[in-house]
Length: 383
Image (cartoon, rainbow, N blue to C red; front, side):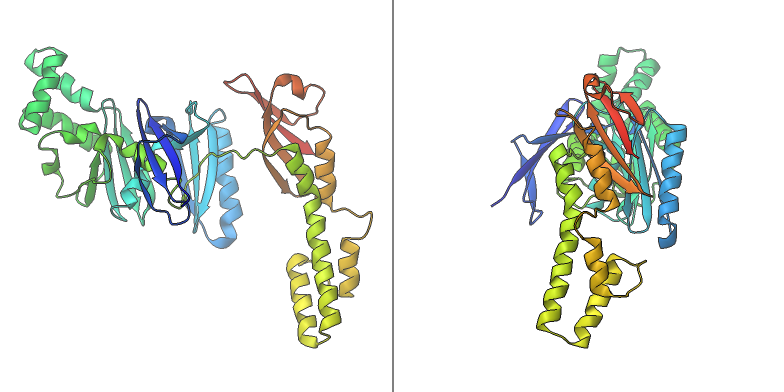
């Protein structure tokens, strides 16, 4: 049986999940696997817009332009799910190779309990409110007050040191007037209604009497409350992920070479299949099928002399424009470069990647950016 392990880090806390990628069954594990770091909510920004099918491209470009203009130094990524575009940005992203925004992790965890409601994650320095609708993240807010704020208010009120205030808070909880007022202050600052289903997570959710404030609270039974964020991060690898993941895909120069010629190979196979069908079954229904398949591949081409058009597309010495651009881009690639993505739009090929600065000398690049590791992210455009 195939089993994989993923490990999530949330500050000093970590948790691992072992899962079957086919059946999607999972369980907590003591093993360690690929590490994904959580980016705190106060270093995250999430925007989304719902769109009609014909507005998808315009909506996506509008959000990307917003991110470039307002937050040029932040890492950004987008995703599409149903009729919604998510834009995610993070500031001072984690040093891990892969990372997940805390609001996405918490929304994912909540969706395992209910499709609509509120999750409140009580930490020491902050409290995070995540609203879920239809099983998806709807909004989130961060109040930069948590368990330490309760302790400080109690200590100041009773003129005792922080250690004594922490001990008293743990033993007495919400029965202390100062603690109750501080908790209600945090809840009021969030602006959320507390009438629906509320899932309480984080170490601060163990505060005695806290659940009495919520008419319809949900118990977290999948893991210890302190590890809720970690579990939500791990489950990104197990469940379908509708949110931006900031993943980079490494493409080697060899991948580019294969890609450059794969398009021609597909059309050659298509042409041969048409010729074979015509020889075996000379019937009108198959001719109609040929025309339909050709129209899918070349919607703007007139269906005239079908076989001649197909042969022209793959004739000796003729290459697709994309093939030519990939071959041209290959001239600038060197061993040691990492390529994360390529994009072909409006006749232009754009490659994005990372390399040591010495490897980029003499190459005409559209843009470059220093990374915390000392390497340089680059964008190469052809033409």
